[in-house]
Image (tube, rainbow, N blue to C red):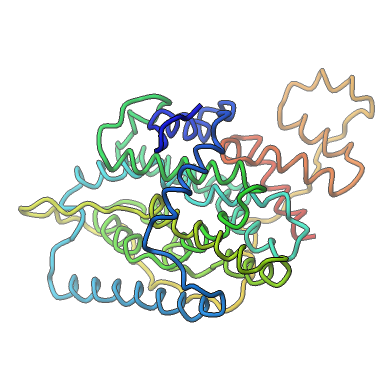
Length: 379
């Protein structure tokens, strides 16, 4: 159990380990989250005091972030050096330290996956499916970032549970991931805070946009680091969910205060800290890709279409006797058998959702579950 006023580094590591090591959830994960929320309540960076002011305030914040990125672009076009990565070595070090945060960015949205039938939460459910790549490995955020690390020889050596942190940046990144995962696990208790956290996470980020720019200049896959739409805040699904939920909660003012605390939690633990480029000559390399302009912030939300032709949901025949399933040697075929025996779409979705947790959605069976869930979600 946690006993100190601040969450311990060991607890942070144990919660983060559930993302990639398939460990059981720590018993103190909710207490960890509550302690983080208590710390966040004292942060100065919060939402406007009244919900009626939120829309205009978010738009101004978004415009300021995008304007800051345009100023960055203008400075670079005028010959200014890179701000954050002088060379490949510094970029590689950053990719390692940022790995926990980037691997888990969006994982908290799993907390609403069970609300897929609720129209107000469907935008956030669709955002989680985007995080999971709709079951397509090439679009799965976890797999993309892992490939980015491998392609650049940036394999984290200190992301094991209980391992020591070698930098302030890596400790902060792991804390960010642990908060996302704890929100995913305890979303039913902290639903308002989950919405507020993602409200902040889905705002445009000048830091993410600048990082994408410089990673691309050094030959790295900027999209694997952060999708352009995510960096530009072009699909604020939490905002659309909040609008619907605020119209039906019994105490909107109290709910909004909790949303505000979730927003502050992101300001405290979720923001990406970029390094300052080391002084001296900077490496010059051919850019990997021509980066497109950040996509506009949409006025309404439409889930992204599937990015490959849909396959049949169930492609094999299975015996009706469940005892015969013991002979099924493939975990994927066993999932198909369980789905084939489901008596309703709701039962099938529950089976699939359990396999799509942040720690499972990048595994073969998790990818298959996400692919089928995505297809059923659109029916």
